[in-house]
Image (cartoon, rainbow, N blue to C red; front, side):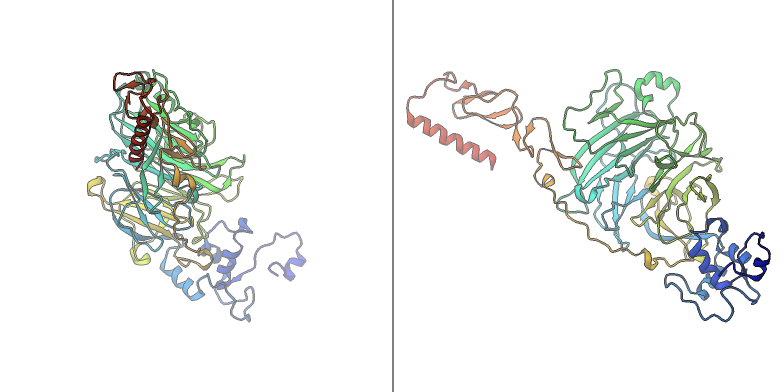
Length: 577
């Protein structure tokens, strides 16, 4: 119907063009057919309809005598659309404020359990829950501020760095955090602080709180400086945990002085947290005290990064080679703010590899990485990589087809007069919710103690805030109810549900103490390397008789045996109770 015309029948070799479309139908055509005929839609809807639409009232498709179109209820009505187009610039989005009063927010993540909760990270060491109806819970989800060493001066990146939930969090309750600390654990070698990656488990009694008694340190890295730290944690569709480390401003002299530290700075490490490993911790060479892992050493996935400003993985697509599509903002060197965007590929050295996209100097400020938009609210933003810089400049990268190059475009945010609110302040980072919508974290001041952090949601004003096809049922967070989480008392549960015992304990759920030297004379091992002795015996193995007799001596009568055994059982029962 679109291409049928007597003129075209007479000119067979003429390239077919779209006929003039009626103005209101043009907008519906644009949004409905954009994904099927991408070559026609290099412009936005206003530019497209200005070129292909008919504004003078003449004949247009699907004809002047047609009745009012049957329209999807999820699209705005024609009158509303025209009014919005007059109100907003053709390419602008809105930043809708959803919460304020935060202290230096650094990240917003979701746990993927269907509850649609947002988990807000504050640099000082707190994680707060924002429910699906935008209510901030009074008690923090995680409070480790006594462990976290955070910085107060501008440019000091220390603090709580990142949070990632296990892909199977709904069943195993596992989450992973990275932060900087200065606990006096290492006495060898120079270092300013330690970057630590820790596994925690959610509380069995309260799904809105972490059980802080369940930490398991995965990795520790000593660092000399307080910039270019990295520390982001990210799970890919492959189920592996990726750890992004900056170069830490390390120089060649530092590398010679600190031995093996240079092996991990500026690297992307990959760890299989599901490995059933309950054995002895990974042994660290004596000449390299700067790395520690509770399991086998991590795989170096890629290296050559300098100051990764947040990375994003596309959970829906692989790249053209079938690998994960991971995009990171970074700087091109140690002492520059000139930015670049990298597509992180296994085995690459980005000290020498060309960038996927060069950003140039961003007005003296480093780029801040965002997310690949996979939400539903904005159709024109779908598949775009959203990022910015700390001065509040926002941009997107779009790729028309899989085999085409990425193209950079500015992302325009509307003013308060057109959007109802406007974004003001320094950009601290980006976040993503369970539906794929993108959030922006902003702080009006640069010091942690005086900051006034806000969270904004990126919305498309030409679409309803929650279109009908984007709605998802909200599930209540469930209590952790696995057998391992209930019964594993003297160990930790692996993400696959196995109870790994601490040193000195054994058994299916680590309930049985283990003594390296067996208890003698009826003694029972009740704690690691500690025997509960029968009356009349003492010592680590209950081998000494308290009356000066040897442990194997005989008792005078059966009655003494009965009395001793009764006393022993009472003592044992009392100890157990």
